[in-house]
Length: 172
Image (cartoon, rainbow, N blue to C red; front, top):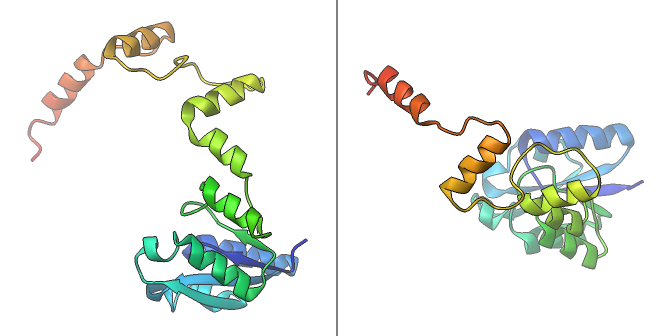
């Protein structure tokens, strides 16, 4: 169990993590942008550190700033919430190299699931059920129509689109 974690997110996501940590007796560090200085997650966390300007690319997506905040506050782990850096394999690898636990999937799992075709193949290899689809990336309209027909999906959407255009013709 951790004694203190950094939450690399904001708003409702961060609040939920803070509440769960409080119930578990885990101290929290909130990071925030200049624009979020007065946000609830900043007020409810045990500690808070500004990591950049309002723009998310200079704050919540700023990996060096987040790692610096984690090191300064001596946390054991980083919880990314979801969105932002939650599915960033590079961030997970950096956390690992800095001896900070990334609360989430491993970098390898993020990479495996980040590419839809690779994710599909990984799930098939593991024996998990998957929805019907193509064996690979569809590159042509003909391939799409063949795949749709093979999987008993509607293959010709032209009639549907024409009806919709006719139905919506009066709209601006």
